[in-house]
Image (cartoon, rainbow, N blue to C red; front, side, top):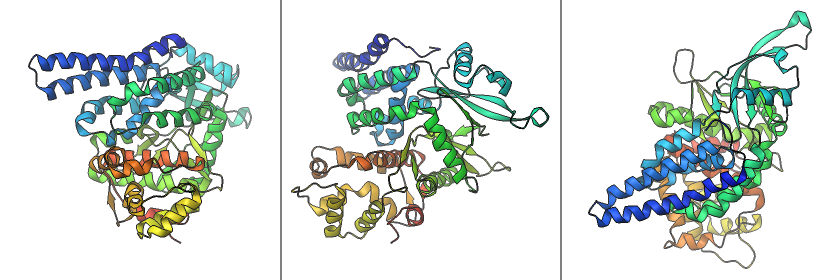
Length: 452
């Protein structure tokens, strides 16, 4: 597949076939078990084939399909190990790659959105993309700055992000169809509530299609982190409706590589830098980078090849925080929960709208329910693991557990939706890394209300 399939009927048919394919393989698996094959061998075979179909389809369709797959890939650490193991290779591959669009299409997009004279500024463009995402792909190029006149022409390496033609239509169509088939796909991902995940993707889809909005956010981040010793954000060079040109970030691989092959020292180092960026970003810019999947975070080794800096890409999904910072109540309530002050916790959550009027909750259960957000701040260094993440999801999503009933009584205010989703995604990424991070220290430095 070399271009974004644009016919809605064809895309819908491929997405609708995903749960049907899973159901068919289950039926075949039942026949194999009746024929004498061990149940665990059959289960692994069904899961492996399902993974291949699901993530190949999501990656090839790009658009909302691939975005859905990338969102699932961040939460892979929450899946039971017997389910996650066959999928892991396909999930991590989806975080870093996708089939490219034709060179002719790329050039058409450049002319349409940078102007007819684009080739006078973009004097060289690599024909093969260096990266691909859900709605666009990135090429390396060389940009000539003409502002200073003929005698002062300077060239620099740039990243040219080009949106797939028809990406907007495909994105929204895919997400509508995935919402329809969510129930059929859900059995493949026990413990993950698919429908709210899709709803959140739909909510922010329009912002991600707007490259002018993305350029504004990236420029603000680049300026805010220009003096940071450990975080690098490339500056914006030029922007059109469906083309974004930024400074080139020289990095051989992303955090997906560290997840697969990194040493423990690398996992801890880059895991800490990721958390520091996540919380320093709102403090410096008033915005939250809300797309914490590994492909957006690039490793920049030190000159001697040792531990280095962390580069951050893709500012399409950004929460513009109403108060110009993360809510002060958020840090204060986490601190109250750490101190096990049940009465103050319930009162504070009720005041913020998490517990509605006339709804009564068990304070002890509430503390247990909030463990994923509180436990990492309860020790000097917290080690995130797949086992820990899996335990949190199983406890909250097990219908037999008391915390499952509690979840139905809680309300997530609109202002916290993207913050909540980003925090969960960050926990998933850290658990994939298996990183030990001074989480409490970082919250004390950068989360309003926590250290007060």
